[in-house]
Length: 125
Image 1 (cartoon, one colour):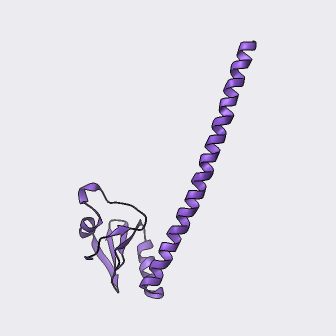
Image 2 (spheres, rainbow, N blue to C red):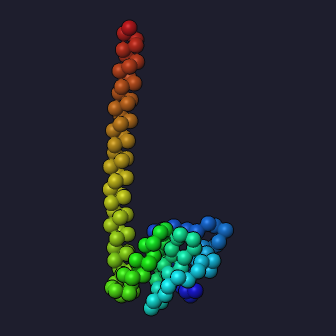
Image 3 (cartoon, rainbow, N blue to C red):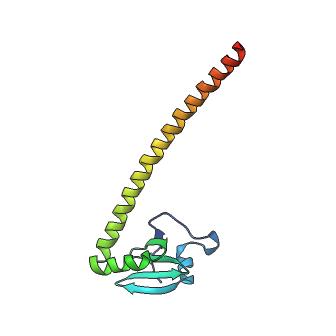
């Protein structure tokens, strides 16, 4: 069990009844470990904790793939890549959400005009 505070790279949290990642991780089985990186698992989910406390969590077989990358690229190189990918994903999501906000605003304006025109048409009839 790491002596550092565990914090998810993806900003997720376990159920509040666990009291945080450090408590939750004790309920998981250790599936693999390499140079301070520990791969925990519970059912079909994986939790990979790096020496600095960064947690990568997800579902499926990706945990094993990440551990293989840790072995091939090195602990800190893999963590750096994962953090860079996360920043890129957040930027893409921010861009998409901004576009969605603008689209919603435009559609609201279009619908409001259509309602006004409908009222004018009904009064004219």
